[in-house]
Amino acid sequence: MAGNYFGTDGIRGRANKFPMTAEIAMRVGMAAGLSFQRGSHRHRVVLGKDTRLSGYMIENAMVAGLCAAGMDVFLLGPIPTPAVAMLVRSLRADIGVMISASHNPYYDNGIKLFGPDGYKLSDEIEERIEGMLDKDIELTLADSDGLGRAKRVDGVHDRYIEFAKRTLPRSMSLSGLRIVVDCANGAAYKVAPEALWELGAEVVAINVEPNGFNINKECGSTHPAGLQKKVHEVRADIGIALDGDADRVVIVDENGAIVDGDQIMAMIAESWHQSGRLAGGGVVSTVMSNLGLERFLGDMKLQLHRTKVGDRYVVEHMRAHGLNVGGEQSGHIVLSDFSTTGDGLVSALQVLACIKRQGRPVSELSKKFEPVPQLLKNVRIAGGKPLEEAPVKAAIEDARNRLGKAGRLVIRPSGTEPLIRVMAEGDDPQLVEAVVNDIVEVISDTRSAA
Image 1 (cartoon, rainbow, N blue to C red):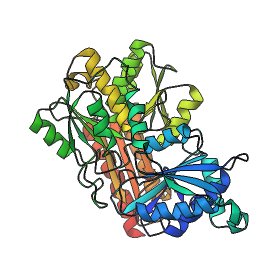
Image 2 (image 1 turned 90 degrees about the vertical axis):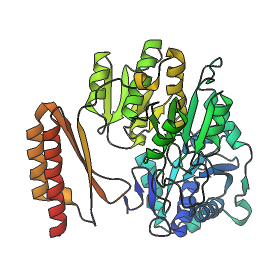
Image 3 (image 1 turned 30 degrees about the horizontal axis):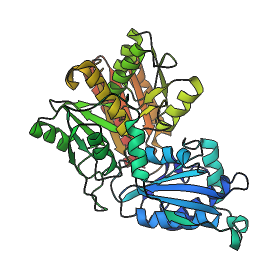
Image 4 (image 1 turned 120 degrees about the vertical axis):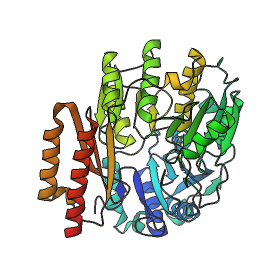
């Protein structure tokens, strides 16, 4: 049954529909709990969530499954994904669970799992857990006297805030900076404004009133227009937009212009390279990162390592090759000196550190390279495998030939939504637009014919 549950970032889907039902969440808790029992100590799990209405249902179902497997569950409440990854190690837990669908609308939800080292699970471990979900695992659950307990844990927000603050030099203050932070009505609505304020900044917090339905709704890193407007309105030095679980960030400069993940990686990589902190002689990103980033790093004799889409694959490559800066164009920035996964707040703090050190505005610091013209279009599909159809294959091959060595083409199915993503980039914007439109049209025609 491999591939029916886990996607590129855990299990995700519409809440109360397959695979995001209470029954499956309970069975994931059972399977994960059985998979991570090590030694004779009381096994423990840290379990966080974002602010979606369905989080209550999924949380309780997972607690039931985990306790049935003999795991004690520490309930963290709404808290960022990177905080869960940090607390797995801090509390010496056997598993970390984050209930979130990240940047998706409120009606979706998901389950992300972390191992005892704070890293997301490998494909092999996910496949092992997935293989248990459709089997009769009740026979291997805990005896009546070995069931787990569940309890709410206080003080976890303070732990994460202190962790985030310690990623800056002890002597550095953010005083003198006016910061607008958009928390997307999500998991960071308490911790992000508090951390920035404690570091000395003047903080204007928006979208910090979650109601179960408004997470990511026209706000956060995927909808930064409100943040851009507020930066203008209050004449802020910088705007910071997080997504629903705060593992990604988009920056807005003092003029309201968006700074994407590629420019953020370029800024941090240059700063760390100059200070001797950058490890591995390069940066890890995905096939979606702009060719301009690759050229910028090349000018510094640094290499851009590309992986398939998903911050989990970025992290795996970083660990395997000894690099400490990686991320995605979408704003998942992984700084392995501090975190085991993307951390929107910590990444934003590194940008703020650059501002404080150099005393220059964001608009100057963040324009590290001129992006190569790039176009991404999504084609919604109802099913099937359009990328295996002969007309689509022919259109893709033709597009690659037309772009030649002066551009790149990336076509892939989304791991979280029923979409085919078609991206092209090159020095000729008209050619880029033409090849993307041609491929989108052929995929659409194939879908209609089916």
